[in-house]
Image 1 (spheres, rainbow, N blue to C red):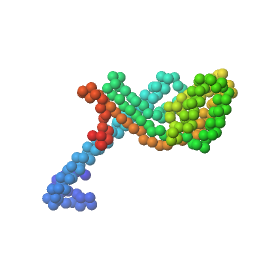
Image 2: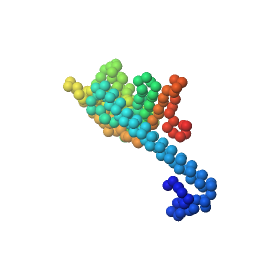
Image 3: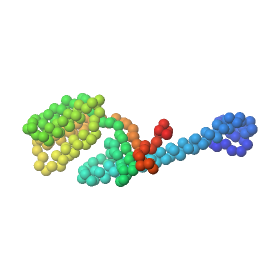
Image 4: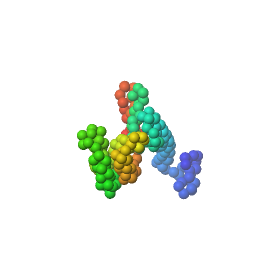
Length: 215
């Protein structure tokens, strides 16, 4: 509560004559209210930045999914993104932590199912070599963290096979293996990062300070 007049109110609700309050406490009170007002304004506008960024992240993600003609994709993005102004004068980088991990109890089961699938192909098949490496990278990733981009590529390959009208026993093996892989994925909670760079009057890009330690 901002103090006014010749009578102030303390924390216990007692009325205290202004003349009885030391000049130090009066100055302290004045600055406390100024700082709190500025902080509340900063909180309000920072929340607006976060809300606008989240809205943009979802909108641009769905535009890219539509442009890529991918059907059945989740409406919410699971990975980060960079959003640019047309003239590159603004760059908003949204980061997501590596929050997918693989339940190791499934590793051997999934590996056996994928090996069963790959055994049906010629070892010199370039496409299968690519898919095999992709799966090995996912199953044996460093630190147990999963590359979400690789997961999306693996799922897209599975979905393409599932939609195919000429799929055979080989395709069924792969679809089953990826389905088991999906069951083994675990999601860890993480915080989204927002980094905004804008071009200043000198033509150089500078980072907008969104934390008080950056000012």
